[in-house]
Length: 156
Image 1 (cartoon, rainbow, N blue to C red):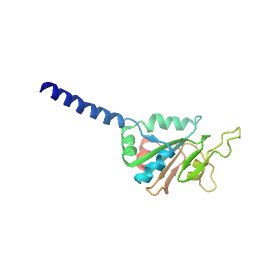
Image 2: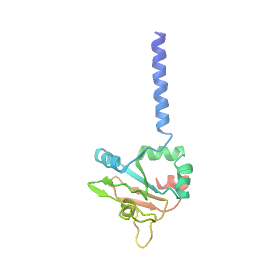
Image 3: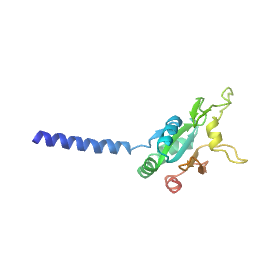
Image 4: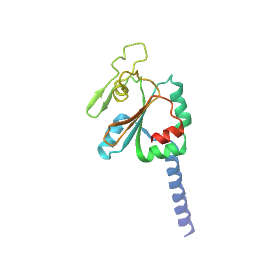
């Protein structure tokens, strides 16, 4: 009897540990995973575009996406996608194929997906870029700046 209750307690404690670990970080997914997830269950989407050279993108990773309240809000209410805006990968999404059309250029070429989702009339694309979409995958808000934890929570 005692060993049964000990096993039950350990299983119970481990389930809380796994749940806690799941909320220690934003659950980032790829565009391919997003395509599948939206088909099964529509949900709001946050897309964080970054580049390896972008200091404010790295700061958002360190300061914003590590805050428990930000992590909780994103993981509960959004599908979260993180994408290198200069990626040279071909991405299949929503029945289309998206590429980095200028990938032969030696300058920092921007992938087609951030250009489509983060386009703004008359303004150049800049990083960090955070895009918020509704359940129908329609753009709600676009930010082209560092978002502090407070500003991120307001945007969410």
